[in-house]
Image 1 (cartoon, rainbow, N blue to C red):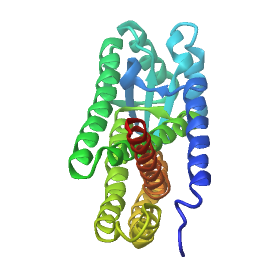
Image 2 (tube, helix red, strand yellow):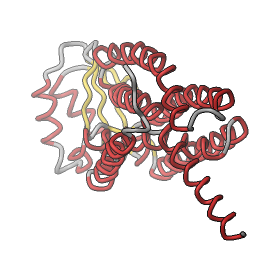
Image 3 (cartoon, rainbow, N blue to C red):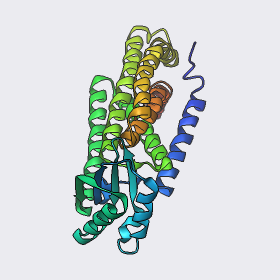
Image 4 (spheres, helix red, strand yellow):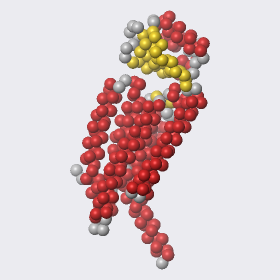
Length: 300
């Protein structure tokens, strides 16, 4: 199959622009469902000795909402071995004891396996650190690609990576999955994976440009290069997606956000390395050449 990434660039870039716009709308209208890690709150992990009666558990928590208002926005997660994870806004010691004693009375004996409290200050600090990590990662990518290739490749590469990250975050916001610390790991993994895929394409473009740049147009070189490496990208991504699919099916709720973000990011990361990064390099190189010719004409 012959991919015409330059001839059909308007369609590919148009599709990406629409997906990014939709994702940004989701991000600002629905907003991310920040978990305890980022907005602060309490996490209680309970393991019951018997099979959990979900109806009794929920009705018990509902009956406590007037006394413990934080339970109104609770999140319950069921795991194997009769274990539940209860996430709420931050509780006082008295409220926590009330909840635990009422659960013992109404739902049976259990063991408090884990109890974590994250204050709002720590949550804000984690959010700030996550954004800083993304910013530093993008800057390092620009420096690396500029040194190894040239500046237009760096801008195109970062634009393609941001395209993947924005779409992944927008779709996670749309799905209303809880954002926790592993989600940041997923975003950074997407960033690295997508950039690695993009560099493979860039490397082939540079190699063919050095060899045939005097006899072929840059558009021809890009299309030839993409067609030489795209099957490698597809096969690599497919094997990775198969592993992620298994995790999605059997990884449990605790890894749902992480696995879903990775799944979305891998799909769009493969797409952007082929259909976004390369056309952007072509357009920026073309603009730079046109501007250079205009400047020379003005000087003459």
